[in-house]
Image (cartoon, rainbow, N blue to C red; front, top):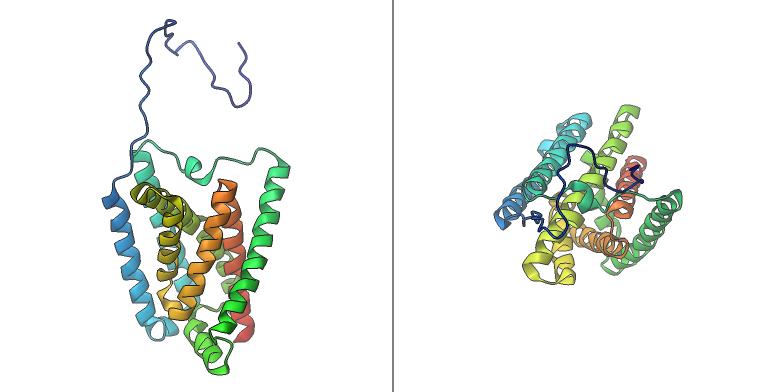
Length: 255
């Protein structure tokens, strides 16, 4: 019998189960919490180290070295998540939300990601102004704190875009995918989990300073709401990549 797209295919090697006989299907296991909290501990150490050295050690390093190192450890974390998923009988594709079923589905995610990103930027800009972050002293402080990240040469711009795409994929898998799943199971409430994960996302950007960490947590909240609404990480991945790409190019323009 010819199989249809999306349906399982059978061949002569597939055992035939008599009608009425019980089939034992192994259910996916849960990822242990030690796996999650070990990852949070590592991220906390890295965030604290980045916050301490953003003015010092990083400022004298070549940007290409920073970008490549960050890309490498982002994929190491994603590999760690994949390892935990595979041991529990889960797939990374399931965590992301499957595949696009049509061109229209893809275009909807593109439109949603851009619209939510623009709307979030407007809201965060208003919050930043209310917090006094538009004052000259605070703007200069932010520029100095983030100067080590700004790409300069054409090669650095290209690497920055690669880094932005990596962060868009890996960090969404990590925060809106893996952490959201684990904390929803732990807290038995996806909205409480969303708040916790958004806070972790902000705390993971220690090099940005306390005020910007709050804004980043709110940005993570926006990405999380979008992921829950679409039951997919894809729109958030696009918005995250766009956010990081534009931020880097703005930093370059302000140097």
